[in-house]
Image (cartoon, rainbow over all chains, first blue to last red; front, side, top):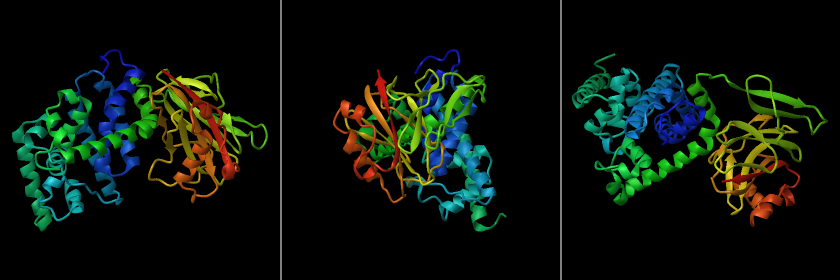
Length: 166
Length: 247
């Protein structure tokens, strides 16, 4: 990594080269479409590259980028869902396969109804299989907040699944 | 993936900074993580070869907050049927300067745009370029029936598929920029790029690859000398351009 300094096209390209693969992989996993993932990756960097240039520690940059990319892609999925395009589907982490949802499509449909913060927690735990502590660090929130948001998500999701909530 | 396996984010950090990652010892002994890492590396390579070249300019422009600094300008050179080549070069705003014309092949023209960190310019045949430069392409087939393949071969005889990406069938391609792009492998030496219009989409990758290997495999001088496909493929619309990769 080069030192952060005067913003330049070369610095932008270097940042993109360094972190682009991670964001692309993230978007590919969530969107499951190479073109859409490519577009989303570019959009995330167009939005953030100037801010990333001020940081030089990957341990800080990557979790932040990951969070932004996740939210961005979830918004893409939500918008697709609203337009009646491809149903929102998510690839659930294999070690949380027993999560109390009937299927991925339903999980995605439910997920689309929550705010960004709650979705980030639900995706982190249920899709990525991240531990609460790790996710808290990645999202820059406390472990208690992770647990609270997850509990809220699960409670409402169960109601949605059972039909208790419209 | 087992409950002990690191998350995707942890593996991303491992890929970026393996020496600092607390997951190093786990992934060294975990077949599941090895498989995940292999897939991640494959997708990362896909980003570097296809996504990065196509999208980096928008990111660079965003850094300078001049998102529309670059644009495609078209220059048409009407010099007869085959030579009516529409050329595009990526130039800064303002008066165009120093156009380069790529190559005119048999029934088609190919322009290769090189971004080696010093801005983007069209490369002439035999151009010296940075060994890790990013490339983009533009083609001008003389006829409509062009199922486009773009591939390259280096001095070691390794053939790289540049378009369409692996897993996609060739599509009928009109004149214009080719989606995506490629990044050179960083190894100095000649790299010849072939653009080929197959007459039908039934022409598959192994056939195109074999046709290139037949004329250009066998060392740096064969790469430099092989300007066109031979044998039964000699009638295809095609163009090729040589790049000399410099350290």
